[in-house]
Image 1 (cartoon, one colour):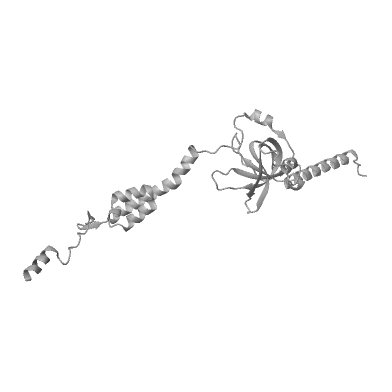
Image 2 (tube, rainbow, N blue to C red):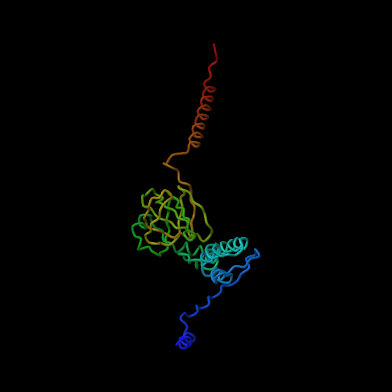
Length: 263
């Protein structure tokens, strides 16, 4: 009986041996000791993840058992790469290779462009945005507000009104083909451009302005508008002094001509 049990035990053991554990990668951490590093903490995987997802690569690097100095250097390189690849490189590529097409006709010379523009009043252009959409127009306007934009692709924008004192507002997008020119509120300008339908902008105070738009290709700065139809203070003083001197001169001349000798 005992011999039968012994043979059965030898042929079929009661407890099967456990499967051997898979050993991790041995890595010298620089402190004369050996550590076991998971595959996702090894340098080759961290470098690959740096190209796929720099943020995940940075997390793996921080949680890895590598030497502290090596982790700091690699983290600095990863952050620099993330900034360049996500911000600097797209901006450079868009600036030099992916420039948006200008919404004004660049195939004409300045003289040909101006000759094609139809002179319109601000009221006529304001009331018919669809009629003059894409048409060459000439407008006499006065700048009332500047609109500052932080968007790289957004052009300089001005809110203008009719030069004859009308209340019809026109939104002017500056796409000047002969060089940028800064304008100030009160500047009287002659705009040569193309109608751009109706649009909306926020001025520097945050107020919304919705009006008929024009894409300005060329511009002539006529003059600076005088506020409230009044002379500046210096001009008034000059005329007052001039009149006083003239009056004094006439009085002196009158005194000489009508001089009476004393008794």
